[in-house]
Amino acid sequence: MSFWRRISPRRAVADFAHEWRQPNPYRWPIMGVSIAATFFILMVFLPEDQRIEPRAPEITWITTYAPGRSDAEIAASNLANQQRQDELEARRAAREELRKSLYRELGRATGLDVDAMEAEIAREEAEEAARERAASRPAAPATPPAPRPGS
Image: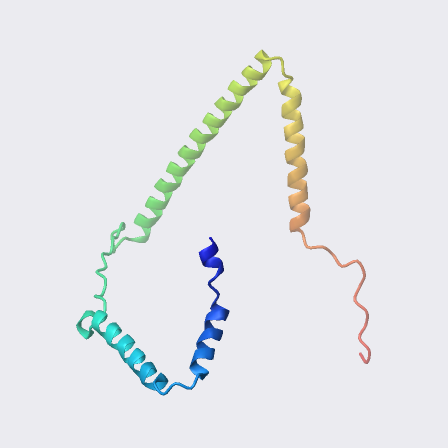
């Protein structure tokens, strides 16, 4: 770790400036050779024939609907999809109710007052719904705006 503590960009720049200010007749030729060597190395590693434009991507369009469907076909597919969604929702609700009944049985078997717990949960949900309704309503101004002078 002590190696990295001795490296400082500020000291490196100060050291470079100090050396550059020294009277040396070779500083400009050395700088020119350094720039030329850097340019040469970059041009060797990045030749012109390697810098090409990327190919345009190939696009594959996937269509799931027939392009010439009538309004009646669209309405029928929407109705079938809605019925499928309703069936899925009904199954989800049935699974949720089964899960709740299993937890009720488990709670009663372990001596918990399940009815009181459900009443507490229902009360908390009602309070939360009331808070959300109150927050969604715009607040009425407490006082009417003052008349503007000159009107």
